Structure formats: C-alpha cells, structure tokens
Image (cartoon, rainbow, N blue to C red; front, side, top):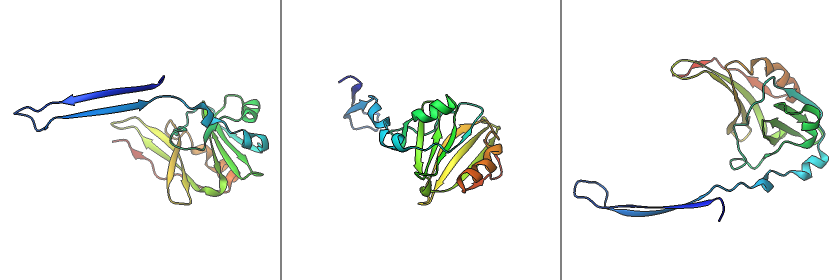
Length: 175
C-alpha cells in the first residue's frame, strides 16, 4: 500500500446549513511508475540526426501521466548533448523529441501540424512564453514554458529542422 492513501469525510446535517449530510471516501494513488518511462525499442533504432539546443534547461510542461509519449531522455541524447534541453529530429524513424530537465516527449513527426511561440507580457501576472505544438487532429499541447521572447530566435531554425510552420502571434498582457 506504499504510495496509496485514503481519506474519509463526514459532513453532518444542521438546521442552518444547506447540506443534508454525507460521507465520502477517497483513495489517492501517488506511486510513480518508472517502467512507463522506458522506451528501449525506440532507443535501439534511434538516429539522432539534428538537435536544436536551448541555452537554458527547461522543464517539460507535460508528464507521463498525461501523455504516454513522455519517456526517459534517451541515452544517445544525453551522451551527445548532456543535460541540455532542446528539440531533436530523427528523420529515419520520423520522430521528433522535446528534451526537458528530466524527461523527453517523443512524437511522430507526421502527427504535427505546426508550432506556436506565444509571448505573454507582464502586467498583473508575470510574463512568460509558451512553446506549443499543434497536432493535425486539431488539439494542441504546451511543451515548454520560459521567459517572454525566449523562443523567438528558435522560430527559423525549428522551421528548417522540421519543415513545419512556426507562428509567433502578437504578444498579449497577462491580466
């Protein structure tokens, strides 16, 4: 039962309350599943052709519990680029990889439609930039988050690397 917890909550009836009394039981699974992060089959055939490194080490904004394509950073990437975050391309296997601080998101290149670098200017909230991947099915995911305008200089290199459009819409204020 390590990593599993439970809670029970009883609310009671009062003459002034709107609740009619109830009991709830919750179980929480906080265990980690490292085996889900293994990707040996792909790592054996991986061809690291090109890599677009970032100057800062960034966290992926997607976890393996949200997307099954999040895996350990392949050994080949670590051997060549160390602890650098960035984007690699594997033309042979039609894969693109996004390397974060601890994990990598590995996608089929054919699934992707285009990228967006959305800048948000500081106002009531902090400023930041999102690196967003848009899929051909119409959905999208934020892959990386960094300081405002961090990704702008990577637009042309990413277009050349992937042959996919990179959009940088007008920045808006974080209100």
